[in-house]
Amino acid sequence: MGKTFILKQLGREQFKQTLFVNLRDPKIFNWFANNPGKIGECDPWIRVFSEFAKYDGQKFDNSKNTLVILDEVQLSQGLFNSMRDMVNDYNFKLSATGSYLGITTVMNRVAVDGEQYFHAAGDVWYLDMNPLTYREVIAACEKYDPKPFEEVYGFYLRFGGFPSVVKAWLQGKAVSASDHFEHIKQIYDTLINESQQYFEGSFPKSAWTNTLTSVIAQINRRVDVPISQKISFQLSGAMEMGKKKPQVIESLLWLESCNLLFTGDVFSNWKTIQPVRERYYFTDQGLMSLIVSIALSEKRPNIERSHMYGLLSENFAALAIREFTRPMTYSCKNPRGEIDFVSWDGNLATAVEVKFSGGETKTSDRLLKEGKIARLIKLANSEAVEDRCNVICLPLWEIYKLGEILGFIPGQHLYSPVSESLGFDDIIVTTDPKPGEA
Image 1 (tube, rainbow, N blue to C red):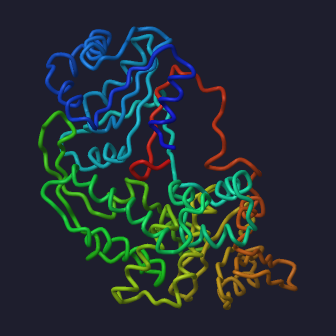
Image 2 (image 1 turned 45 degrees about the vertical axis):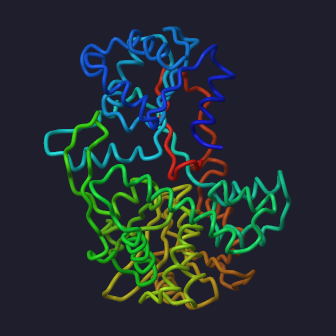
């Protein structure tokens, strides 16, 4: 179930009529592009939408009982920049969607003559639709097909939370790794193909795979993503009604804007605890696993089969921490030391170490003795126990408990249900990381 489906359902259940503007349809996009004087000037939206409704066989009136849905709004700079006026000057209610809404931030970043996309502060409420979290997959299993935590964990660690992947697994339509990877590969291929509309010329799929492989190598070797992997492409800028204004964007930035990657901070000094660089992680475990498999089959350097589950586990932990706070890693060259993640509850510092198949935690043990951290949480693929009072061992399949252990309020996290106090006087803009996913 995706963002467009949800908004159409909202229209059916809460409004007398819905005007649906599908900007992915070339005929509809061209209708708005070829009606000069209607966009970018006085914005007489009652007339614009009334005429469009007649053209497209729909109904529209300027009343609070009408919901207007602008689907893939990032494709039209004119419509995007007019949303605030629509909300402030008219009675109809407005919502918008964008699978690649990150392009608006990217275009503003590379623009040489001011921001091209206007983000209205206070009038726009953004809802990000991410792959399912581990706790959400557990809940889905409890509702549709109860399974032990260990089994759910084994699936999620390797194949992630894209809804179509989870659905096929729950329905028994995908039972092998190749079945799951085929689903994930289709999603990845769709992303690559649809990204093409935002770039000049064509680009090889290997370019994106190279970038994602370098992210895995960065997690593995604790180094920055190699500059050589930050492949640059020319943005077409074609979203603004046919205008062309090429700009350069790195593939890494594009993948982050598509919500396929997210970042955490790295610090190296316990006195200042100031971030010195960022570390990249995958938004979905399944995509990471697919790229790891490709890298192993192609015998890429810096990635070994024996490291696969350790890498997946570290990303799994980063996703769990991301539900509550931005992940932070400690990395220092002198004295040399690494801690996978560090979290603070007031002045209380907690080290979180991911040890899928065991291993030492020398840096955390040293900092425990020095009093720089108050406790250590070990995440492992087992139910190990420690006889030290300041060390907590947590099986990876119980990682949904991590936020509460770290001191965050149970039930309040990044994906908590939104406040019911929000009124429809705001614009609701929904985005998702992959075409057709929610």
